[in-house]
Length: 175
Image 1: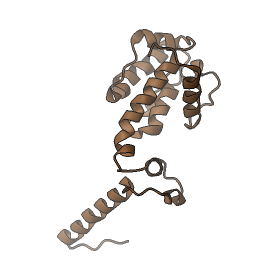
Image 2 (image 1 turned 60 degrees about the vertical axis):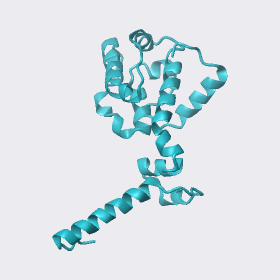
Image 3 (image 1 turned 90 degrees about the horizontal axis):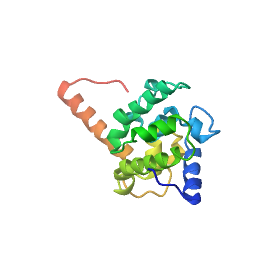
């Protein structure tokens, strides 16, 4: 995390961040990510169950920024096998140029590792994954993916359980 990113790595990171819908416009990355809120939003975008955004308070004060980053380390990053050292957090909170980019790059790698079972093991293609998470338009489902989709597998599983429930209880459920 202390390593400096190359120009190509930086451009790739910025392009990745630009694709993520965030609550505030990105103007100056060092300042924008200093309170930890937008970092929490990045994780929430890819792993929605991992982050409760209401716990992160947009802040200008150093103590609140430190609190947000501490919460990220404890509750979120720990589940990604990732930790931002206290000194690095302090430098991020103080808007030190060039510190947040390596952290975000490492975070991106950890998110990719966490998503890997869903994208590389023929469980779901990336389009289906986004369909599940963001409920995009149905036409997004028409794609050349030949592997079974987790969405479809889950629907089939729930339908099977519902049918078993109907048989056991003898109830007729309205459609």
